[in-house]
Amino acid sequence: MIRLIVGLGNPGPEYEDTRHNAGFWWVDAAVRQLGGVLAFDRNYKGTVARINRSEGPVWLLQPMTYMNLSGQSVAPLARFFKIAPAEILVVHDELDLAPGQMKLKQGGGAAGHNGLKDILAQLGSPDFWRLRIGIGHPGARHEVANWVLRKPPLDERLAIEKCVADSVAALPQLLAGDFKSATARIHAGPQRPKPPRRPEPAAAGATAPPAPPATQEPSP
Image 1: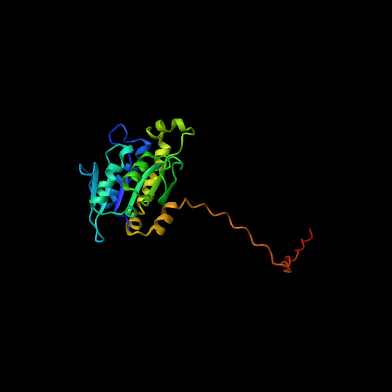
Image 2: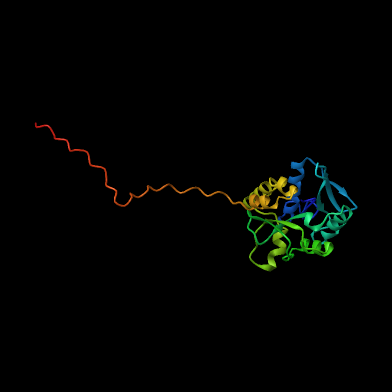
């Protein structure tokens, strides 16, 4: 089961609507759905919401350390409440997925993401879950830093917001540890329209129905 959900981003109004803050957007939506309130906690260098559930409390966290130091917020909270890496979900922006795409996975490397890199270093384990929200790639590596710190155009923002809404809908499965159902729901794409049905060919040896008898025209 998931006991700690972390959304990655940068603090401050100048970063609020940038691509790099997709994780913050996700946690905002999750807190609204769960009926919690985010408040700054200096012990964990971030805004934190605690949601009390019958199965035990769940924490939602937005590190306020800036992206490169995200682990300095995540690790103290996880250690204090004895939350194992496999009970942590980190939601972050993903260059290798187009806007409108998302993937759920456990483990792996940082893939160049500085927030993940610091969390890996501070936790000392790659076993946490990751929800990757696609933001697209600028096409050239030297443009990545500016790309993630820019606001996406409206069509991309709407595609990212749809991913956030669709994946937040899988919260019950994630919190319950039903990762198979959560993965199926998160990875499901839009349904394709069914093609029109073709008429079935006549069976071999079948005879066509007899033609109706010709009618005789009356003589003038």
